[in-house]
Length: 97
Image 1 (cartoon, one colour):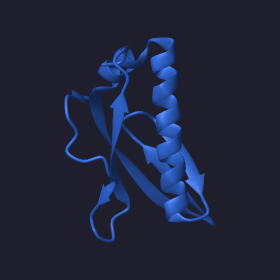
Image 2 (cartoon, helix red, strand yellow; image 1 turned 180 degrees about the vertical axis):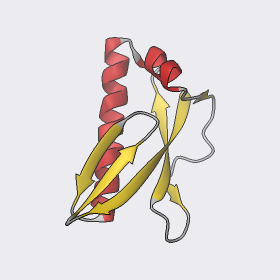
Image 3 (cartoon, rainbow, N blue to C red; image 1 turned 90 degrees about the vertical axis):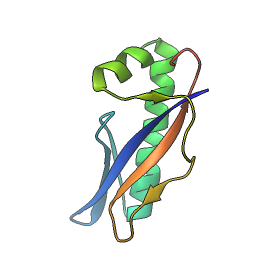
């Protein structure tokens, strides 16, 4: 199985937290930082699933400069203390790799 590693950022805007994945262009929001992060992770997974179903995943990843790796370093979300930038590892279907 192949994997990609992408980053997420969460910023407070008014009463909401806005979350984005700059590599893939996905975004979401939430009433807390954790909720916004969960929502953008879900949105990113749905986006990747849709790209795979359409047969466009490899093309989009290549166009966006996202590297595909044979083995992830970790399957967990990671962040620096007090940071609002996170990283996530996503498995890809064989059609996308």
